[in-house]
Image (tube, helix red, strand yellow):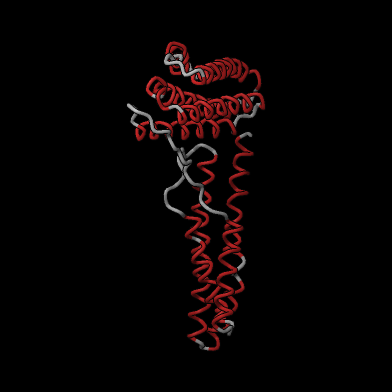
Length: 281
C-alpha cells in the first residue's frame, strides 16, 4: 500500500462521519420555517437537534482519525478516550429532539432515539480496545512488569505493521507482515511462559523498536525516490535488512518454544547495531 493509497484509505474511513453532517441538513429548512413562524419552541428543538448531530459528527471524526492513526502505526496504542462510543449519545439526542419537533409522542421519541443510537453504533463502530494480556502466574516472576513489556511489544509490532502497509513493493509488505506475525507469536509464548521474559528484554524493548523505526524510515525515504535507478540501492539494502529481520525473528521464536534461556542476544546485538547505524539507506 503506497502513500497515495494510504491517504485514500484515511479519506474513505473519514467519509463515514460526514453522513452525520450531511443527513441533518434538512433541519436547516425547519429552522428557517420556525424563525419565519416565530415558533421559539420548535426553533429550540430543531436547532438542538442539528447541533447534536453535528456534535456527534465531530466526535466520530476524531474517533475514526485516532483509529486510522493506530491502524497505520502512527499511534502505537489506541486512544484512551472513547470518542466513537461517546458520539452515539448526541446522535440519539438529536433524533429525539427532531422527533419531538415533528410532533411525535413520547414513546415514539424514545423509539427514534434508540434506533438512531443503534444505527449509529452499527455504522460508525466502536473504538479499538487494547489487547488483553494475561501472563500466567509463576514463582519468582514479576507478572506486572512482564505485562508492561508485552504491551509495549505489541504496540511496536503494530507500528511495524503500519509502516509495512505504506511500502510500495508487495515483497516488502509481505516480508514485514511475516516478521510481525512471528514477533506476535514470540510475545504469545512469553505470555504463556513468562520465565523467559527477562532474557527476551532486548527483543521486547530494543529490537522491536528499531525494526519499527527502520521500516518507518524506509517508508518515508521511498516517497522521495521515485526513479527506479535512484531507488535501486535503497531497495537492495532494505531487502537484506528484511531478510535478516525475518530470520532472526524465526530463530527467536524457535528458541522461545524450546524454553531455552539464551535468546539470541548476540544475533540481536549484531542486527540491532547494523539497523541503528546503517538504516535502510
